[in-house]
Each structure stands twice: as structure tokens, then as C-alpha cells.
Length: 351
Figure 1 (cartoon, rainbow, N blue to C red):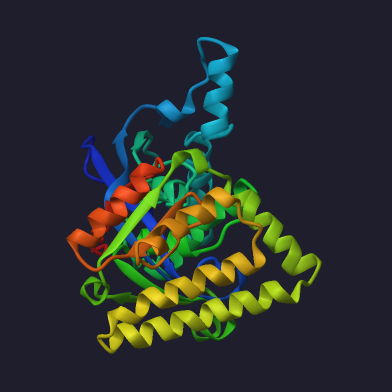
Figure 2: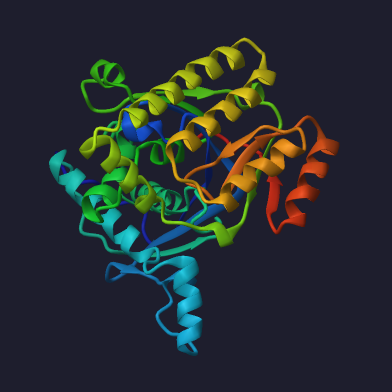
């Protein structure tokens, strides 16, 4: 393939991706299941990319390596871990380069600087890492004037996922990357049958109109942050090494809940979604060793007559509410125990 024309000069390219929440089915995507997820606009990862003499990734506040004392370092690493966003971005750049070589795309010799910022709460399962590298991916596509003819949209999440799984050895599933690329509300089918329909390259991905959903909220507590990769490593070991039948059965049941939720939403019966989300959480609890403080996050919602489940790997919940007054009661209960809460406003699907 011929070299690309090389873009439009030294203009700044800005790209943003919202926070992610699983709605039903997660994390069955790790086990060939089905998931419904959405992006919401309360938080986002934002990337600015512009032409420069050398390839440079500018450190963010979460890439700090200098501290006033050891106690400050310990507090910082306890909350944010040992890695910031730079390794994620560099891993994405490596996979992007590899993907273009595999596809015969000759990129022009143009260098760039990447600056990034994210206000997505860290480590609570809202897809912050995927949002950062998806925003970088979208900026690179624009910088090099690539389109879906070059890299089909359903295959773009694969490149983003490989940055984490192949380059960094992080245990992760495809759902975060799919909804980050697509935006809005997306139903995802990762079964072997879906992959077979798509030549083994990807699953089936379908937009759902946001108006089909009931009113939703997100509650979280950054003090509950955990490494999602570490959590998923344990589950994969149980499933793939120990052949734990309980894991397979729970994930199959979660996938079946996705079919049930889709039927309810398409039929205009959004009220059925909440009880389905309750059952989804109960399935997770049946096979995961969940910390009591994370279970409490769900109990608060149920005590207020709401339905809720984990938004991701723990630390944040997504739940239903009836109206603004109900949301205020739910919010008061969460805030009384140190949680933050926002209503869900679904981000627009990607153009």
C-alpha cells in the first residue's frame, strides 16, 4: 500500500473517550460470553496530539516519580499503583505500528507529541486505562488520515486490547475497548458463533438507543480501587487451569442475562432491567471472593429500593432509580458512607 499523505500540518488533534460501565453480563467477555456496556459523560480521558521533531509522551500527574517523603510515595502507590499512563500509551503505539505493518500501511515519517489527561476515577472499574489508549488510537487514526477502510471499526478494539494483553501482559477482555471505540450503548456478543460469523476477527457489536434504558446512576469510592488485571488473573486461572465448572456456569448464566435484557429493552419494558442487574451481581458474588466493603456498595442501593451491580471489577456500582427524588434519596445514603454518585448521561455514539 502506498504511503499516506501525512496529514494536515502542525495542527493539534484532540480526542476524548468517556468512562465505561458494564450494564449486564460483565465480565463474561473474558470467557466468550455476552455483555451490554455504555460510555457516560461525567468523566473522560482526553488526548492532544501534535506534530513535533521527536516522538514524545508527556508525563501526567499520575506518572509522578518524585515525592516529598517516603510516606507520600507509599500513599500515592497504594492509590495509583506502580504504573501511570505512559506505559499504556507506549504499548498502544507499538501495537499500532505493528498493525499498520501487518496490513501493508506505510505511514509517513512524521513524529508527534502526545499529552493526556484523565479525570476518570482510578482503579474502580470505570475503564480509565482503556479510555486513555482508545483516545490515543483515535488521535493516531486522524493524524495519519486512516479510515475504517484501512482498519475496520470492529477490528480496532483488538489493537487496543493487544496493547494491554500482548505488550503489557495484563489480563483483560474486549468489552471495554469495544464500547470505547463505538461509544453510546453497545451490546456485544463474544461467543464462538459470533466470531465464526466474522471470520474469527471479532464478535458481533450492536448499538442500542440510549432512550431504551431506565434512569441510571454511578456510585464509586476511590478507596476501593483494585487492580482489575489481578482480579481477572485469578478467575482465568480457576477457569483455564483448575477447570472450575462454577466459573463456566456463572459466565454462561451472565451471557443469558444479556439476551433477557435485550428482549426487555427492545420490547419497551425497561423496568425489567433492574432485577436482571440484581441477578447479574448475585452471579458474580457466587464465584468471586468479594470484599465486604464492595458488597456494601450494592447493599446501599438495595436498601433504598434500587437495583445495582458492579460497573466493572469493583469500586464502582451502576444502578437504577425511579426518578429525581429517588436518586436524591439514594445519593444521600451513598454520601453518608463516603461514596460519590452521579446520574448517568450516555455519551453519544462515535461518528
